[in-house]
Image 1: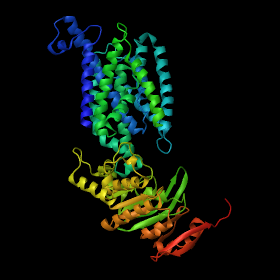
Image 2: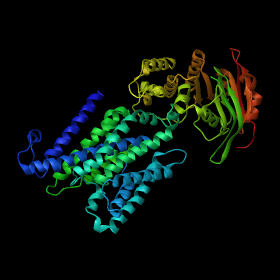
Image 3: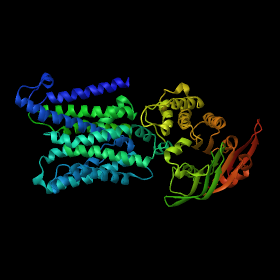
Image 4: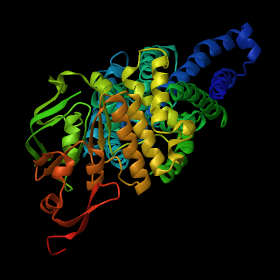
Length: 318
Length: 262
């Protein structure tokens, strides 16, 4: 039964991928995708605009969803999402700082963003830790950290306004003009992060039983929690470097996957990865075509879906 | 397996909880730890299984310092049932019990035949076989406690540590849980160490008792000899009467508090 559900989610991912390739300012038919495009302009659009953008959407969806799924178990909090609790802001602050001050938007940006994400995560733990982790304290600490780091980002954007191209777009998160160069930035982190996360599925399951039970079952809770937080931070940081502060994917997707597939992480993780790819590709397709020729950043659409979802979870779970 | 603690002292949050406690838990015996609230019973139990690590002194299993064993190896010989625990809403009884096999996991692959037989055995010991596909959250308090107990039994432990295993249960379910623990001890010679509140459970279900009061061991030994009305007066500040039931067991019944005031 659950394998069927997982297959359906995978089918949605495939559908999202092709929808994203087909739709846009220039129509490309499904047949052209499979059998090649004659028209040179259309071929260029497909190969150098649509395809990389769609792949970036898939990878970002996977990264943010897995990051959220990990954080929800590690922070024992249904509302944990890299964006809400400030990990993305930490990544953003450090990423932008490197990009603007060091004039290097390339290879250095993601490691710097990772450091920022880890610092934000440590800060949240530090603030929220008081005889263990309480869900409500994580959220409150996260809101504070997020606001603090967000202020830093705004300050940077103002000081270096001459160097900011599409800073506003970056703040809400968007996939506009993402190219093969961005695929190259993301791909290694997506692959490494996904493998590491899947290997930790059983550890994530045990972590959900509570720290004392998990310890009794032989899990080195603090070590595992640190490693998993680092994986989540890496996944989120790489996504932030490419698409900016795209929120709520890490919140909505793991929860929906949990509703469909249950809370066994061995099934939940692949489900969340596929669903994340489907949600971001489909949302981005929708966002760029709904007000054509004006493109809506996908982050706006995600926030419109995500904020009510967050409130729903807040009422249900806390 | 024999478990011993030597010169345990611990401070938590700047407050001294235990001072120079030494005790020995005999292999294959059931030992009850009792004492007033805040005396340090649960703290001692958490030190014995390394849930609390920053204490001074040593804890040894058959003479080997447990800090040298490693978490996973420790989980294969010692299981603990803490009070603080949680399970996702959709966890079934069988899934919960399967977590008891986590210390034996291999890098790849599912349950081995030994895993399956351990899970089946745990279901039978706790009489939950008919409940295996039920969700833990849908069970009654007593059934749920048995499910968690079954998870620890699936670890096939040589030592089983239980923190107030009967709290929040009605009297029938309390006795049911105590009977299961006694059964496990009898069948597998599992060393049992349990924090209990009920003096009569301690008298009826344990071979040894350890009384903790004011950060120290007040008394240790045969529960029938130690747990008297007089001890209760000194440890809990209550006046108690002793009755003999039809089976000839002595039952202690606390009547009123000795100390005056609120």
